[in-house]
View 1 (tube, each protein chain N blue to C red):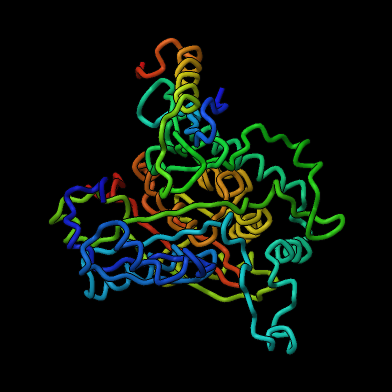
View 2: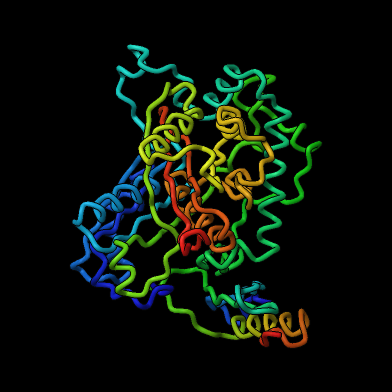
Length: 358
Length: 71
């Protein structure tokens, strides 16, 4: 809101905030409480939303659909996951039938195990390829930070420690730009002896929060809001929970089919790197090279971390900032895999596309 | 340096952190005054607390010649 002073606070029609673990301070209808805490007028409603890793992404597609339907003019969508306070699986009590009737394999509830399963299913996706992709993610992220491409979109947050007093977090802390291929090769495989998945080729589980503004095109124009990108379409699809990482493949196919586009129309990909193997499975399916420069050009979750429900909007802010630099690109795609076997894809159009003026 | 000179002094300790801030060059010092209690015990300065603050300011001055200026 501070970055968009042209937007009167009472024009916000909905606040949707996602969290996977909706207990404690992440409970109590986050969208509404966040709106109240942020000082939005009491007339602005809000709700919380959950689709595990794709929480913020679903907050975006759901509120955007409300805008498309004509129910809203402006909405705020985002997500939060304080995994330090609320680790994945905290307080989880799955329905006993899930286990007793073997509705899903027990490994489906452990994301690292689903990534190992994916390595099993696609033996050509080797640990070496996963490690090389992970190293590139760290290097691309570090370069984007050094170039000032990542940073301006971040919001400074106060931190506190009993030992050191107050602090200010101005950058993301997880990245490890000093990562080497040799170092990655020595990491343990906690999900299976002699496995493939390590802390180095998977996203870190950390704290994060994201938010974005969505508006109807005519309202954005009326208020003079900066337009980062235009939502073209989206798709969500379920897959076998045991290999949830494959989810973005069918969800992308659905999103492409619904929007009448092909994979060749996509000039930039922001793929959530929950696990390197899961991104590689996507790239292989669509015939894209591991090091294709259209894919996560500023690095991804392996470097910056994956605070579950917040990550979808991070992919989007990163894509919109790349759009601003790339008038040669018309369409971009954000996609992620989702726990319990789902994929989520949103396709966006670049408002700076040079072809639009012709 | 934060040893209480007065018996029973609740020492307000000065804790120093150095920060860089987006959009500004140079390093900033952030001092947290903390008496180790919650808001129901307001921070007060006795000899120990003042000594702690003095030491923090000395440390900052030694850390960088003019740490409070953005370059």
